[in-house]
Amino acid sequence: MPPPKVCVVLHDVSPATWDACKRVLAAVDGFARIPLTLLVVPEYHHRASIGESPEFVTAIEKRLALGDEVAMHGYFHQDEAGPKPWSPSDRFRRTIWTAREGEFSALDATAAAQRLAHGLRQFDRLGWKVAGFVPPAWLLGPGGRAALTASRFRYTTTRRHLVTLPDWRPYASPSLVWSVRSRLRRNLSATFNTYLRHRLRHAPLMRLGLHAADAAHPDAMRFWLDTLRACLESRLPVTKSEWLGLSP
Image (cartoon, rainbow, N blue to C red):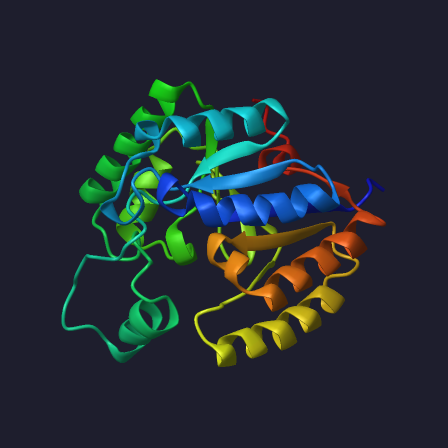
């Protein structure tokens, strides 16, 4: 049997969030230098694109040289699409639960394909190889799914699975993730993720989904470092591409 693995993923990486990202990365690097999967947003919330910040580009290239990988994480990371009126379930999922961050939840195939293409061009100009696309908030509607199937991306992920493309073959791997927008959400996150960590203790892959926003919350960062410490006692750290066996 192959040894179990752990995959540490940092969401919402961009020039606009880089100060917070650096704090998360420093905490992880200070504990153990392991390969990470960095979910990069090409133009986070319509702010500076990834190629416009020399500091950001240099920092990411240093991490790539040390074994990290980049994946595309939406394009704007904002859900600005219809349809309206929404059903009650859509309204809850896209506003209350995800705070209008599920960018690819309601895009049609044409709009989704355009954003995927724009993002890939930015990665290509920087010379950054990218195999994965992760929709913000893990929300992917029919249009986004069609566009992703026709793209050159080789994997995507959901809250519960890693998925190879274009065949959409799923591999069960629930992600631990915190919501830090309120004290109630943080308390619920601590309880649920502690339970999930125990339930997945024998799983082939443990996914730790950190966010840039976690840097501002010591309770979240303490949980991640404690979990990483426990994982590294018996698990090998890998990127998503490595676990899926995808060549660079």
